[in-house]
Image (cartoon, rainbow over all chains, first blue to last red; front, side, top):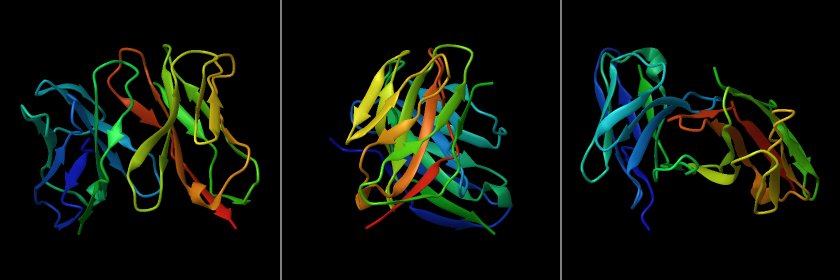
Length: 113
Length: 112
């Protein structure tokens, strides 16, 4: 069973630029969500996708957007990067069902200079 | 809104010591509760879960009991090993909700 994979592992961008992060869900999982983890903090929920539509969003501005594809893979796009966007971005997939746990990828470390 | 509070780290223990990491939560509904662990250089992974009051989750010698009356889900292990050194996150997911809310994490160091 293939786990959640994310790319790239590290990325350095300049303030004002745009970035796209990619995620392949674990086999059999149709729900994907993205989290931002600042250094020394717990993951913060950005949004969730189910059947290619966003069905839940945390307290992040519209410049954070995403896509889910028919094969359940996903992208996170961030426009107009700010220094505070520097963080570890985690993708997580799960089966539908209230008690299904999240399966995380290893994350993409984004540094904005 | 819903939230999770866990004890600050780091926690440093000698091998074979008893471990407790405290976690309390605030939720309007009846959440499921989780402990996730992040080993050095690895992604977050589920350690254990409990879905209703008085349930006990257990895995790899770790245990946590869902206490509705004290809104707590403390993580315990009777005898820690060096390989347990990691960051531990307490988390909740509200029934019917779409997001999992995490605590800030507690780093555990176990010395040989």
